[in-house]
Length: 340
Image 1 (spheres, rainbow, N blue to C red):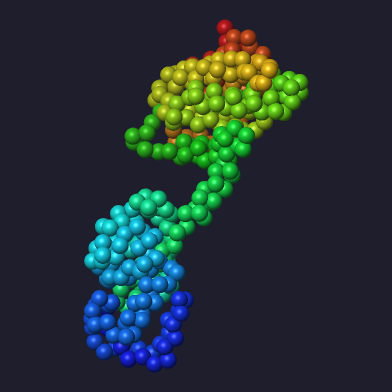
Image 2: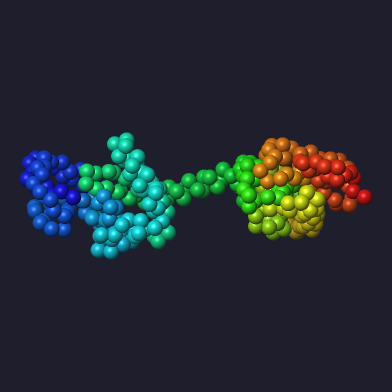
Protein backbone atom coordinates (compact mmCIF):
# COMPACT_ATOMS: atom_id res chain seq x y z
CA UNK A 1 0.00 0.00 0.00
CA UNK A 2 1.39 3.44 -0.89
CA UNK A 3 2.29 5.84 1.94
CA UNK A 4 0.55 9.21 1.96
CA UNK A 5 1.24 12.41 3.81
CA UNK A 6 0.68 16.20 3.66
CA UNK A 7 -3.00 17.04 3.91
CA UNK A 8 -5.23 20.10 4.06
CA UNK A 9 -8.89 20.65 4.80
CA UNK A 10 -9.17 17.35 6.65
CA UNK A 11 -12.55 16.52 8.19
CA UNK A 12 -13.22 13.19 9.77
CA UNK A 13 -16.01 11.55 11.67
CA UNK A 14 -17.03 7.99 12.35
CA UNK A 15 -18.92 8.02 9.08
CA UNK A 16 -16.51 9.62 6.62
CA UNK A 17 -12.96 10.75 6.04
CA UNK A 18 -12.19 13.54 3.57
CA UNK A 19 -8.98 15.32 2.68
CA UNK A 20 -6.43 16.21 0.02
CA UNK A 21 -3.54 13.78 -0.20
CA UNK A 22 -0.19 13.85 -1.92
CA UNK A 23 1.72 10.65 -2.70
CA UNK A 24 5.25 10.83 -1.29
CA UNK A 25 6.52 7.26 -1.30
CA UNK A 26 5.77 3.73 -0.20
CA UNK A 27 5.53 2.19 3.25
CA UNK A 28 3.35 -0.47 4.90
CA UNK A 29 0.13 0.93 6.38
CA UNK A 30 -0.33 1.36 9.29
CA UNK A 31 2.47 -0.54 10.99
CA UNK A 32 5.47 1.82 10.41
CA UNK A 33 6.20 5.52 10.06
CA UNK A 34 3.18 6.64 12.08
CA UNK A 35 2.78 10.25 10.94
CA UNK A 36 0.13 12.35 12.61
CA UNK A 37 -2.33 11.81 9.78
CA UNK A 38 -1.60 8.11 9.52
CA UNK A 39 -2.25 7.80 13.25
CA UNK A 40 -5.51 9.72 12.89
CA UNK A 41 -6.58 7.60 9.94
CA UNK A 42 -5.67 4.41 11.76
CA UNK A 43 -7.63 5.47 14.84
CA UNK A 44 -10.63 6.52 12.76
CA UNK A 45 -10.80 3.23 10.86
CA UNK A 46 -10.22 1.36 14.09
CA UNK A 47 -13.27 2.98 15.69
CA UNK A 48 -15.85 3.15 12.91
CA UNK A 49 -19.06 1.24 13.67
CA UNK A 50 -18.56 -1.11 10.72
CA UNK A 51 -16.33 -4.17 10.81
CA UNK A 52 -13.55 -3.44 8.32
CA UNK A 53 -10.47 -5.27 7.15
CA UNK A 54 -7.95 -4.46 4.43
CA UNK A 55 -6.27 -7.04 2.22
CA UNK A 56 -3.39 -6.82 -0.23
CA UNK A 57 -3.58 -8.11 -3.81
CA UNK A 58 -2.70 -11.61 -2.56
CA UNK A 59 -5.76 -11.52 -0.25
CA UNK A 60 -3.61 -11.30 2.88
CA UNK A 61 -4.83 -9.31 5.87
CA UNK A 62 -3.01 -5.98 6.26
CA UNK A 63 -5.43 -4.28 8.67
CA UNK A 64 -8.29 -5.42 10.92
CA UNK A 65 -10.26 -2.93 12.98
CA UNK A 66 -11.62 -3.52 16.48
CA UNK A 67 -15.22 -4.09 15.39
CA UNK A 68 -14.04 -6.72 12.91
CA UNK A 69 -11.97 -8.43 15.62
CA UNK A 70 -15.04 -8.72 17.83
CA UNK A 71 -17.29 -9.91 15.02
CA UNK A 72 -15.09 -12.63 13.56
CA UNK A 73 -13.63 -13.74 16.88
CA UNK A 74 -9.93 -13.30 16.05
CA UNK A 75 -7.39 -10.67 17.01
CA UNK A 76 -5.62 -8.70 14.34
CA UNK A 77 -2.32 -10.25 15.40
CA UNK A 78 -3.78 -13.67 14.59
CA UNK A 79 -4.86 -12.54 11.13
CA UNK A 80 -2.26 -10.09 9.79
CA UNK A 81 -0.35 -11.70 6.95
CA UNK A 82 -2.78 -14.63 6.58
CA UNK A 83 -4.70 -15.29 3.36
CA UNK A 84 -8.38 -14.77 4.16
CA UNK A 85 -9.71 -18.11 2.92
CA UNK A 86 -6.96 -19.94 4.78
CA UNK A 87 -8.06 -18.20 7.97
CA UNK A 88 -11.75 -18.77 7.14
CA UNK A 89 -12.11 -21.76 4.75
CA UNK A 90 -15.91 -21.45 4.79
CA UNK A 91 -15.72 -18.11 3.00
CA UNK A 92 -14.76 -19.86 -0.20
CA UNK A 93 -12.10 -18.51 -2.53
CA UNK A 94 -14.25 -18.61 -5.66
CA UNK A 95 -17.11 -16.58 -4.15
CA UNK A 96 -14.79 -13.80 -2.92
CA UNK A 97 -12.76 -13.68 -6.12
CA UNK A 98 -15.93 -13.58 -8.26
CA UNK A 99 -17.35 -10.75 -6.15
CA UNK A 100 -14.05 -8.85 -6.45
CA UNK A 101 -13.90 -9.29 -10.23
CA UNK A 102 -17.51 -8.15 -10.60
CA UNK A 103 -16.80 -5.14 -8.40
CA UNK A 104 -13.80 -4.19 -10.52
CA UNK A 105 -15.71 -4.70 -13.76
CA UNK A 106 -18.73 -2.68 -12.62
CA UNK A 107 -16.80 -0.14 -10.54
CA UNK A 108 -19.13 -0.81 -7.63
CA UNK A 109 -19.04 -2.93 -4.50
CA UNK A 110 -20.41 -6.46 -4.45
CA UNK A 111 -21.69 -8.53 -1.54
CA UNK A 112 -21.20 -12.14 -0.45
CA UNK A 113 -23.29 -13.86 2.21
CA UNK A 114 -21.73 -16.68 4.22
CA UNK A 115 -22.34 -18.59 7.44
CA UNK A 116 -19.27 -18.51 9.70
CA UNK A 117 -19.62 -21.70 11.69
CA UNK A 118 -16.69 -20.73 13.92
CA UNK A 119 -18.74 -17.90 15.44
CA UNK A 120 -22.22 -19.26 14.66
CA UNK A 121 -23.22 -16.20 12.64
CA UNK A 122 -24.46 -15.29 9.18
CA UNK A 123 -22.31 -12.54 7.73
CA UNK A 124 -22.64 -10.24 4.72
CA UNK A 125 -19.31 -9.15 3.23
CA UNK A 126 -19.15 -6.05 1.02
CA UNK A 127 -16.17 -6.23 -1.32
CA UNK A 128 -14.62 -2.90 -2.39
CA UNK A 129 -11.69 -3.05 -4.83
CA UNK A 130 -8.97 -0.51 -4.18
CA UNK A 131 -5.97 0.69 -6.14
CA UNK A 132 -3.53 -1.34 -4.08
CA UNK A 133 -5.72 -3.79 -2.26
CA UNK A 134 -9.19 -4.85 -1.20
CA UNK A 135 -11.52 -3.50 1.48
CA UNK A 136 -14.00 -5.85 3.10
CA UNK A 137 -16.88 -4.66 5.28
CA UNK A 138 -18.47 -7.32 7.49
CA UNK A 139 -22.06 -7.06 8.73
CA UNK A 140 -23.75 -9.55 11.05
CA UNK A 141 -27.02 -10.53 9.34
CA UNK A 142 -27.86 -13.48 11.59
CA UNK A 143 -31.11 -11.94 12.82
CA UNK A 144 -32.23 -11.10 9.29
CA UNK A 145 -31.38 -14.55 7.94
CA UNK A 146 -33.14 -16.20 10.87
CA UNK A 147 -36.31 -14.24 10.09
CA UNK A 148 -36.00 -15.09 6.40
CA UNK A 149 -35.71 -18.77 7.23
CA UNK A 150 -38.71 -18.54 9.55
CA UNK A 151 -40.78 -16.89 6.83
CA UNK A 152 -39.66 -19.50 4.29
CA UNK A 153 -40.52 -22.28 6.73
CA UNK A 154 -43.98 -20.83 7.36
CA UNK A 155 -44.57 -20.49 3.62
CA UNK A 156 -43.78 -24.17 3.03
CA UNK A 157 -45.10 -25.85 6.16
CA UNK A 158 -48.51 -26.46 7.65
CA UNK A 159 -49.04 -24.39 10.80
CA UNK A 160 -51.03 -27.10 12.62
CA UNK A 161 -48.97 -30.24 12.02
CA UNK A 162 -45.61 -28.72 11.10
CA UNK A 163 -45.52 -30.92 7.99
CA UNK A 164 -44.47 -29.60 4.59
CA UNK A 165 -47.45 -28.21 2.67
CA UNK A 166 -48.55 -28.57 -0.95
CA UNK A 167 -46.13 -25.85 -2.09
CA UNK A 168 -43.21 -27.83 -0.65
CA UNK A 169 -44.67 -30.97 -2.25
CA UNK A 170 -44.31 -29.40 -5.70
CA UNK A 171 -40.59 -28.87 -5.08
CA UNK A 172 -40.06 -32.41 -3.82
CA UNK A 173 -41.82 -33.91 -6.84
CA UNK A 174 -40.03 -31.56 -9.22
CA UNK A 175 -36.71 -32.90 -7.92
CA UNK A 176 -37.79 -36.49 -8.49
CA UNK A 177 -39.25 -35.75 -11.93
CA UNK A 178 -36.10 -33.95 -13.09
CA UNK A 179 -33.57 -36.19 -11.35
CA UNK A 180 -31.23 -37.77 -13.88
CA UNK A 181 -27.97 -39.44 -12.93
CA UNK A 182 -26.14 -42.62 -13.92
CA UNK A 183 -26.02 -43.46 -10.20
CA UNK A 184 -29.73 -42.79 -9.57
CA UNK A 185 -32.32 -45.17 -10.96
CA UNK A 186 -35.48 -46.87 -9.87
CA UNK A 187 -38.95 -45.61 -9.11
CA UNK A 188 -40.61 -43.17 -6.76
CA UNK A 189 -44.25 -43.12 -5.68
CA UNK A 190 -46.93 -40.66 -4.62
CA UNK A 191 -49.47 -41.85 -2.05
CA UNK A 192 -52.61 -39.75 -1.67
CA UNK A 193 -54.33 -40.33 1.69
CA UNK A 194 -57.82 -39.25 2.69
CA UNK A 195 -59.02 -39.92 6.25
CA UNK A 196 -62.25 -41.87 6.56
CA UNK A 197 -64.51 -40.92 9.47
CA UNK A 198 -62.71 -37.66 10.23
CA UNK A 199 -65.75 -35.53 9.39
CA UNK A 200 -67.71 -37.30 12.13
CA UNK A 201 -65.00 -36.46 14.68
CA UNK A 202 -65.02 -32.83 13.60
CA UNK A 203 -68.82 -32.52 13.61
CA UNK A 204 -69.33 -34.39 16.89
CA UNK A 205 -66.37 -33.33 19.02
CA UNK A 206 -65.37 -29.99 17.56
CA UNK A 207 -62.24 -28.50 16.05
CA UNK A 208 -59.97 -28.93 19.07
CA UNK A 209 -60.24 -32.72 19.19
CA UNK A 210 -60.31 -32.91 15.40
CA UNK A 211 -57.05 -30.95 15.25
CA UNK A 212 -55.57 -33.32 17.82
CA UNK A 213 -56.46 -36.24 15.55
CA UNK A 214 -54.77 -34.56 12.56
CA UNK A 215 -51.61 -33.88 14.55
CA UNK A 216 -51.49 -37.47 15.81
CA UNK A 217 -52.00 -38.85 12.30
CA UNK A 218 -49.20 -36.59 11.03
CA UNK A 219 -46.83 -37.92 13.72
CA UNK A 220 -47.72 -41.52 12.96
CA UNK A 221 -47.17 -41.06 9.23
CA UNK A 222 -43.75 -39.52 9.81
CA UNK A 223 -42.73 -42.33 12.14
CA UNK A 224 -43.90 -44.98 9.68
CA UNK A 225 -41.81 -43.88 6.69
CA UNK A 226 -38.07 -43.65 6.06
CA UNK A 227 -35.93 -40.51 6.38
CA UNK A 228 -35.71 -40.08 2.61
CA UNK A 229 -39.50 -40.07 2.25
CA UNK A 230 -41.63 -36.95 2.61
CA UNK A 231 -44.97 -36.61 4.43
CA UNK A 232 -47.12 -33.65 3.39
CA UNK A 233 -50.36 -32.24 4.71
CA UNK A 234 -52.13 -31.51 1.46
CA UNK A 235 -55.11 -29.80 3.06
CA UNK A 236 -58.03 -30.57 5.38
CA UNK A 237 -57.89 -34.29 6.17
CA UNK A 238 -55.74 -35.13 3.15
CA UNK A 239 -52.08 -36.15 3.29
CA UNK A 240 -49.54 -37.04 0.63
CA UNK A 241 -46.49 -39.25 1.07
CA UNK A 242 -43.66 -39.28 -1.48
CA UNK A 243 -41.69 -42.54 -1.42
CA UNK A 244 -38.16 -42.18 -2.79
CA UNK A 245 -35.53 -44.73 -3.75
CA UNK A 246 -37.84 -47.59 -4.72
CA UNK A 247 -36.59 -50.61 -6.63
CA UNK A 248 -35.50 -50.39 -10.25
CA UNK A 249 -37.85 -53.26 -11.06
CA UNK A 250 -41.43 -52.26 -11.83
CA UNK A 251 -43.14 -55.13 -10.04
CA UNK A 252 -40.90 -54.82 -6.98
CA UNK A 253 -41.42 -51.05 -6.79
CA UNK A 254 -45.17 -51.54 -7.00
CA UNK A 255 -45.07 -54.18 -4.25
CA UNK A 256 -42.96 -51.87 -2.07
CA UNK A 257 -45.50 -49.10 -2.55
CA UNK A 258 -48.39 -51.40 -1.62
CA UNK A 259 -46.52 -52.57 1.48
CA UNK A 260 -45.97 -49.01 2.70
CA UNK A 261 -49.58 -48.07 1.95
CA UNK A 262 -50.87 -51.00 4.03
CA UNK A 263 -48.56 -50.02 6.87
CA UNK A 264 -49.88 -46.46 6.79
CA UNK A 265 -53.46 -47.67 6.88
CA UNK A 266 -52.64 -49.77 9.94
CA UNK A 267 -51.00 -46.96 11.92
CA UNK A 268 -53.85 -44.58 11.08
CA UNK A 269 -56.48 -47.13 12.12
CA UNK A 270 -55.02 -47.47 15.62
CA UNK A 271 -57.41 -45.67 18.04
CA UNK A 272 -56.46 -42.10 18.90
CA UNK A 273 -57.01 -40.75 22.41
CA UNK A 274 -58.07 -37.10 22.56
CA UNK A 275 -59.06 -35.77 25.97
CA UNK A 276 -61.61 -38.11 27.47
CA UNK A 277 -62.52 -39.58 24.07
CA UNK A 278 -61.01 -42.20 21.82
CA UNK A 279 -61.43 -41.77 18.09
CA UNK A 280 -61.11 -44.20 15.24
CA UNK A 281 -60.41 -43.04 11.70
CA UNK A 282 -59.45 -44.99 8.63
CA UNK A 283 -57.69 -44.10 5.41
CA UNK A 284 -58.39 -44.44 1.70
CA UNK A 285 -55.10 -44.46 -0.18
CA UNK A 286 -54.38 -44.08 -3.87
CA UNK A 287 -50.94 -44.31 -5.43
CA UNK A 288 -49.07 -43.43 -8.59
CA UNK A 289 -45.54 -44.56 -9.38
CA UNK A 290 -43.01 -43.24 -11.86
CA UNK A 291 -39.41 -43.84 -12.79
CA UNK A 292 -36.89 -41.25 -11.57
CA UNK A 293 -36.48 -38.42 -14.06
CA UNK A 294 -39.94 -39.00 -15.53
CA UNK A 295 -43.50 -37.94 -14.82
CA UNK A 296 -45.02 -34.56 -14.03
CA UNK A 297 -45.88 -33.43 -10.47
CA UNK A 298 -49.44 -32.38 -11.26
CA UNK A 299 -50.28 -35.52 -13.23
CA UNK A 300 -48.85 -37.81 -10.54
CA UNK A 301 -50.91 -36.09 -7.85
CA UNK A 302 -54.02 -36.31 -10.04
CA UNK A 303 -53.48 -40.03 -10.67
CA UNK A 304 -52.95 -40.78 -6.98
CA UNK A 305 -55.96 -38.63 -6.04
CA UNK A 306 -58.17 -40.36 -8.61
CA UNK A 307 -57.03 -43.79 -7.39
CA UNK A 308 -57.84 -42.76 -3.83
CA UNK A 309 -61.39 -41.77 -4.79
CA UNK A 310 -61.89 -45.04 -6.65
CA UNK A 311 -60.79 -46.90 -3.54
CA UNK A 312 -63.11 -44.80 -1.38
CA UNK A 313 -66.07 -45.48 -3.66
CA UNK A 314 -65.39 -49.20 -3.57
CA UNK A 315 -65.43 -49.03 0.25
CA UNK A 316 -63.13 -52.03 0.17
CA UNK A 317 -63.10 -53.92 3.44
CA UNK A 318 -59.77 -55.61 2.83
CA UNK A 319 -57.84 -52.39 3.44
CA UNK A 320 -55.85 -52.95 0.26
CA UNK A 321 -54.60 -49.66 -1.20
CA UNK A 322 -55.30 -48.97 -4.82
CA UNK A 323 -52.20 -48.60 -7.01
CA UNK A 324 -52.35 -46.59 -10.21
CA UNK A 325 -48.93 -46.81 -11.89
CA UNK A 326 -48.01 -43.96 -14.20
CA UNK A 327 -46.02 -46.33 -16.47
CA UNK A 328 -48.42 -49.11 -17.36
CA UNK A 329 -47.76 -52.67 -18.45
CA UNK A 330 -50.16 -55.62 -18.66
CA UNK A 331 -49.10 -56.79 -15.20
CA UNK A 332 -49.48 -53.31 -13.74
CA UNK A 333 -53.01 -52.89 -15.09
CA UNK A 334 -54.01 -56.02 -13.19
CA UNK A 335 -53.33 -54.07 -10.00
CA UNK A 336 -56.28 -51.86 -10.80
CA UNK A 337 -58.66 -54.75 -10.32
CA UNK A 338 -60.56 -54.97 -7.04
CA UNK A 339 -58.50 -56.87 -4.44
CA UNK A 340 -59.49 -60.46 -3.94
